[in-house]
Amino acid sequence: MDEQQQFIERAGVILEMQGMSRAAGRVLGAILTAPPGGYNAGEVATVLQSSRAAISVALRQLLMVGLIEHAPVPGERADRYRFRQGSWEGMDAAGIRKLEAMHQLARDGLRSLPQGGDPTSLTELADTMEVYLELYPQFVLAIRQRLDERRKVQEHAVEEMLS
Image (cartoon, rainbow, N blue to C red; front, top):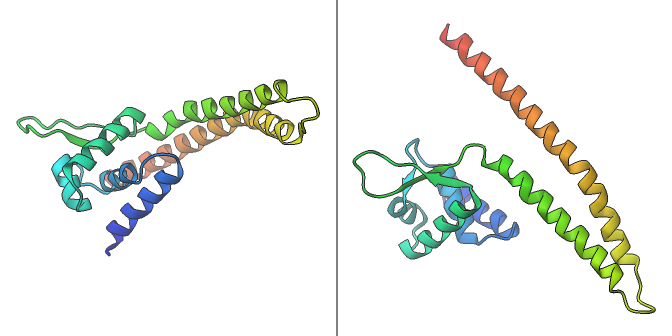
C-alpha cells in the first residue's frame, strides 16, 4: 500500500471515530490528495477501488457537512469535487452545539434523577461541559489568530520568492 492509500485509510478511520462513515472519511482522504482540479465520482471510485454507489453516498455526506464542494469545470459533464477551503473553521459551530447538547443532557439528567439516585456522574458532566463552553470560544479564537499569522508569513515568503 503506497503512502496515499495509507493516508486515505487513516482518514477513513479518523472520520469514523468522529461519527461519520468510514467511506466518507476515505473519500475525504482521496479528495485531500487529489490534483488541483479535484476528482469526479468515477475518479474517486477508481482511487478507492470502490463502487460508484458507495462513493455517491459518501460524497453527499461530505457535501452536507460542508467539508467538500462542487468544483465545476467548463465543458465537463461530470461533477468534480474538492476540499472546501475554510471548512474546518465551520466545525466550530458544530463543536459548540455538541458541547451545549451534552451540557443540557446533564442538566436534564439532574432534574430527572429519581429519589436516592447518585448525581455524581451527571454533576461531573455538567461541570465539565460548563468549563468547555467557557473555554471553547477562546480556543477557537486562538486557532483563528494563529492561522492568520501563518497565512501572513506564508504570503510574505511567497512575495519574497517572487521579487
